[in-house]
Amino acid sequence: MLNRMITIIAMALSIGAAHADAQTAPPPGPPPAPCKADSNARRFDFWVGEWNVTPANASVVVGHSQIQVISGGCALLENWTATNGSDGKSINTYNPQLHHWEQFWVGSGGTVTEYRDSEWRGDTLVYLARSMGPPGGMLQRLSFAPVDRSTVRQLGEMSMDGGKSWTVGYDLLYHRAQ
Image 1 (cartoon, rainbow, N blue to C red):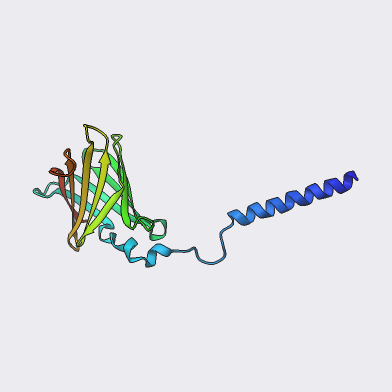
Image 2 (cartoon, helix red, strand yellow; image 1 turned 180 degrees about the horizontal axis):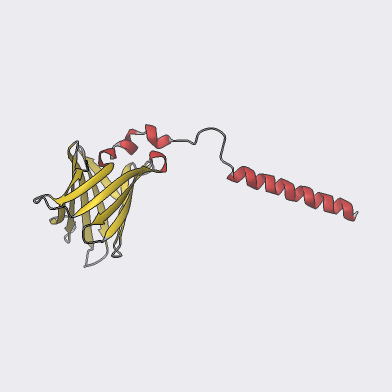
């Protein structure tokens, strides 16, 4: 009787282990890559590359940015380094459930911004973030516009009146590094 119980327990444990392995083992064949064929997920690829960044009205380099395609083509990772030594990263992705792009930014100074809304205006991607702060909150708008094959304009703006008026926080040009 004891031997039979030990045999049943051993069998149950081996079945459980096999079930756990089946849940964690990747399926055979190449991994799925749905974003590589999705034109919405590829639309922001004009920002991919190595960049030297200047203010729009000057030629002095204020930073460098490397934008990489990650997660099977489902996201872009920004690696920003300013010339003053500060840095930051953003993850940008097309959200197929919401049908728009989103960005999550974190800077070395502790700034976190979640751009949860976006829209395309022609070939310009415009993000929108809502922040707590003064009564009514603050809106942040971040735009990316291809100027030509080797230049992208990034415009950061904020509104304290619900979007009736906007103040430019920065206006940058990304120049493709040679």
